[in-house]
Image (tube, rainbow, N blue to C red; front, top):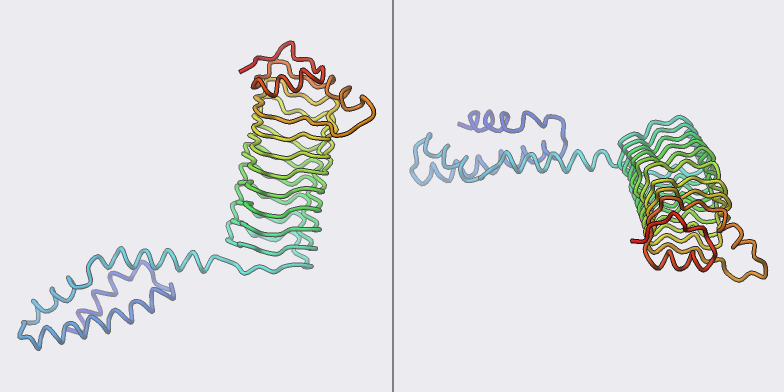
Amino acid sequence: MNEKLTNYLKGVFAPYDGVKSVEELKTDLLYDLQERFRELKEEGKDDETAFEMTIDSIGDIEQTVQEVANLSRSLERQVVTNFSASNLAKSDFAGVIAHKGKFSGSALRRSNFSGADLTGSTFASSDVREANFDGSNLTDCNISANDLTDSSFHKSILVRTNISKSGLDGAKFMDVKLTDVKLTMTDLRKTIFDRCVFNGVEFKYSDLRGQRFDGQTFIGVKFDKSALNEVSFKGAILKNVSFISGFTLTKKYYRAIKTISFDGAMMDKLTYAALKGMDADLSKVTVI
């Protein structure tokens, strides 16, 4: 009957061969089942009855094994990453889980982080040119003071991400919702933003001259003290957006505001009133 119990467990655990924690569970469970079977036999149960009662005593074991296997595989995929000051150009990190990873001062040019969970990681002062962050989770990441030239952030998760003081020429942010992201003190003239939603984003002290934000959405965004000459917000939605100039003895900031195109844009009353006070051209704006 021990062989019958062993074969039963083999069938249950077969889909999870090689998963270490599942193998440990299998060994422990077999011992418990054998003990339970012996107890039932001592109570006078026949073999078949004792076997059925033994199996019934463990409940829905298949669901338990699946949960243990999923957890184990998830933990095994997690990488303890401290790759600071490392040469990792063209590395493949696609799909990894690397919470609070450290990549400071590293060579990461053309590395692939697509689909990776990099929550809380740091990339300060690294060469991250042409890197692929498509679909990656960059929540609470510090990616400041990096060269991110021609990097890609298609459908990335950007929440409380700090990308300030970085080189972003040719970097592409497409189909991204940026939430509480910092893009301050950065030259963004050649950065590509397409089909994005900006929620609580800060662009303070950044150079946005000539940038096109056409058709995109801005909620609670701060463009305070930024260079905004010839920026286009055609067809965009702006709610609670700030364009504060800061203390200045010249009209330079206000002249820049006048060069911005808001044609076809929709904005709330407060944003409209603030821009109107700066003599922005709002003739083709819809107030919502």
